[in-house]
Image 1: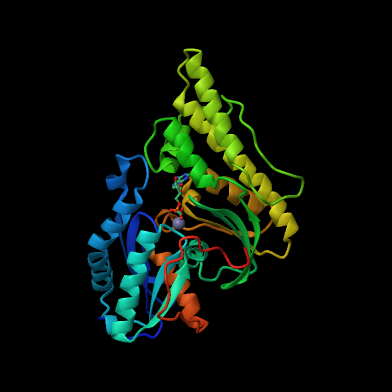
Image 2: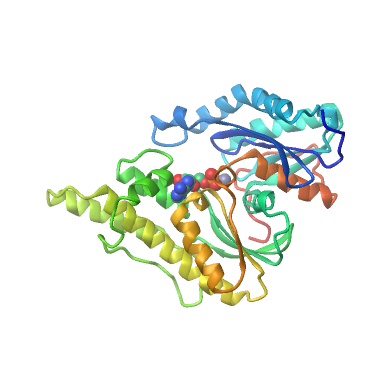
Length: 343
Ligand code: KG4
Ligand code: ZN
């Protein structure tokens, strides 16, 4: 049993299809991290079914939190705070986590912190890079968001680029579905792409108007769907591997080009941080790291388990809020459409 420490934070994540909890000490010492994934349950439907997701969270949350506390060797009364994702995400899924965390914190008289899931994705970098140098330019690429965020410090940031239509992860998922690969699409595309030629299909790289740090991925997705349809109508069998590789290359080219522009726009940035589920893509990580090196800034990206949705990133965000003395009232509700600050 470890000593009682004021900075022990329990983080709980239930915004989509992972029930996850983690206990963090001192901002970067992860004492436990437990995730119950619903991928198998939703796989047969080709995507997350919201009603099923919230029921699964109800079934698993108690055991997941219990295990996280047990593996950390921590009792509830030892905790400094309980942090929970309150948005954005699926309303039913968020409600399970918010209600559970609130009840736990209220009953035990613990500090309570509502966490923005998107901020948590970026702050996940602190788990393995606690001395990340600010200002930080973050590229957040997830299933629902694609953004550049400029962080002056842990909790002060502004949105400096956003997608105008599909998020990068959404494009991966839709293209994977069209190629009849599994869900979630990103890992399947990445695996197929390793065996394909990335110049086999000519696909567009939408950069929008000159100088823009915004993104648009729906044209790329439509181009893939059109080429697949045309090939099938001609009686050809398109190569899944070649299309996956060509698509992934096009996404990476856009993200690298924009990141080059973003680093030139923000020369004060000392670190380039990649974050979100799509950051799990090895080819993307290498390309963005190379860009950071070329422009002489530090690079960081979370390990695989902290890229996709996880309780540890919520705990580290909670730690930052706890340090800043920023707590949340008991009237906190789930906010499925929660935005980034100043978005
Ligand atoms: O951050 P995340 O776990 O959930 C959201 O907050 O949206 O991101 C999920 C997204 C999905 O679209 C998934 O296909 C994508 O991240 N993803 C990947 C990879 N692993 C997950 N995309 C590309 N390559 C991967 N290896
Ligand atoms: Zn996420």
